Amino acid sequence: MKNLPIRFHWSLSQAGSNLRASKNCEELTGLINFEDQLELCLKAEENGIDSMLMAIGFTRPDPLMLTIALAQETKHIKFLIAVRSGLITPTYFVQQLNTATTLIGDRIHINVVNGHTPKELKYYGDFLDKEQRNLRTSEFVEICNAFWTKKEPVNYSGSYYQIKNGVIKTPYNSEKSRPEIYVGGNSKEAADLVSKKGDCLWRFPDAPEALASKIQPVLNAGKEVGILTSIVSRPTEEEAKGAAKEFLKNFIGNKKEVHKGYKNRFDSQGFTEIMDMAFNNDSSWITPYLWTGAVPYMGAPSIALVGSYENIAKALYNYKKIGITQFLFIGWPDIEEIEHFGQGVLPLVRKMEKQEKLKPQNF
Image (cartoon, rainbow, N blue to C red; front, side, top):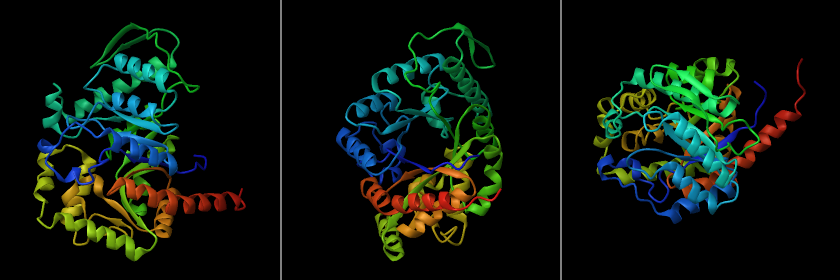
């Protein structure tokens, strides 16, 4: 794969509520403070972020509707919209997304997820097991791609979808043929799906030497790999680790019980791997910069890169050396972390990339 610049994304999931993930799902609300959401999007625009992750689920607003509202108040930030195959037909999803591009332009990526909580999936009438959801999602993406890239009517006969002479009259408003397709998951099925039908695989981090062989099949297919991680960056190493330690004071009352039953709640390989690391390892440090200390309280996505601006930049570049070219961050709170990243870490990363381009190439 050619030497791509690293791209950075940010999750909107906790805007205005940086301890949201520590609460029981039943306590959460899908109502959001629009001003908090907008503030984080504007801050992302100022700090070199490509897109905002728009999560999906019963405790959240509809991601596509929220995207359209936020896009009206922002200039160029893009939106990484989550979609589950069990919630909507592929034909109608393409129609909705194409309509959105006529309203806000080419500012949408899509994040294909299977869902990881069987109890919640049943709220939406989705009773398929994980293997069946994987197969259905593969069909879903294939049909979406067909509507975006084929000029003739779409016909499809699969196990989960049948399409006969399908036509969508609302065009996809972009110079590209379709939106970028991200697929989330640590499983082989997720890697196979993005290798054949998508653009970038999202997975949870590990030490670079442990990740390298796992992501190689995706890279060999000519696709990108990104990692989802929280981040705590400060001017110095001492300040960063102090901030992480200070954050844990929010959980002095021990809220581990919220996430301790994860194996009964989730059927996600990635969630299980990260939670096992956090609950079963003697140390909370996988590497000098990758920390699981908040995971027992905040769940798998709170595995975090922690360090000085310089050390975080080096860590990101270590991941790039094995082929990781995209990062999706969460912060505590996001509005503070995004400024630390944009003003402290990002300039160092871009400097490293520039220096790499200037190095003589061996042929």
